Amino acid sequence: MGPGQVLAALDPAQPRAAAFIDQAAELMRGAAYTAFDGTVPEQPEHGGVAAAYAHVTAPLRRLADRYATEVCLALHAGRAVPDWARAALPRLPEVMASTDRIASAASRGAVDLAEAAVLQHRVGETFDAAVLDVDAPPNGRSRPRPAGGTVALDAPPVRARCLGELPLGERVRVRLVTADPAARTVLFELA
Image (cartoon, rainbow, N blue to C red; front, top):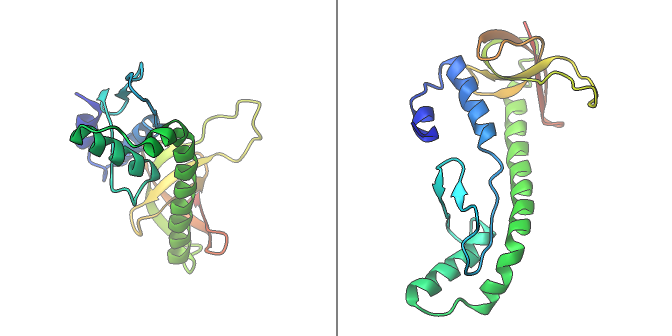
């Protein structure tokens, strides 16, 4: 089965499946943009779909799509690609990587703020959760930090850091230690 079929067959309500889905998403991250003009890149395949892949959405959504749409429209109409679009293509991968990082940080910040606001009056309470990820063991080069990982609460739907020796893919009880909207932080510990 392909990756999509495997993931679609899983029940994310089951802790082990949720942990597997989380790990699979990390493996499929790292997509990048490749600009080309004429010769197709040596590696045109998308890792997640295992086939050649191109993506264009509404030009207001992503900067690269403004140029890609113009290229597609020109090719479809049998006319030359506008010089301004062709000239921008080589710079787009770097620009899109930068704007993707900014957009991801803004999105993460908004979710972190919402989660902290929802939980700020519940510090000290315990919750049922599934362990989605555990920290890698220290490698000697990084600064050691307390054992922990990422948990997903059953309710409210919050995903956050949790301290303790966590069993990956298992159900646990966790206690809310910190929920600070100003700092956009939520922290649990194994109960």
